[in-house]
Image (cartoon, rainbow, N blue to C red; front, side, top):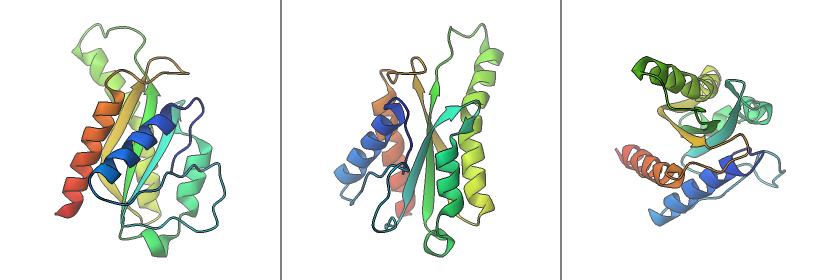
Length: 158
């Protein structure tokens, strides 16, 4: 499940689905903006949002709040986000760490929201930078996404 304003988070969601299928699993791409005749099914779920003002967008937060606890309590939920990249090179390592902390904060909040509902949201978060508010993704974005997805799938086998 994902929400996307300019197509960047959708591009990440598509890369996740592509990698899941490449690893031999079934996967379905769903947007929180659409109504579906059946609830999502599966052994795990990826939930993604653009980060606006340091937080996931409202549609995604509402989706997580309404997610059926009985069906998803014991199934892993993986959070991914897109975030505008730092406008210039960081002056030093402290500034870079500060940016990284800020960039991850929206995903952490979404993960913690899922956990507060008793859902099994995994620790690892994916965040992919977007060159400007409207995009596109940074050049390494799709590769980073596929690598992250492979690592998550490997960890779920254990």
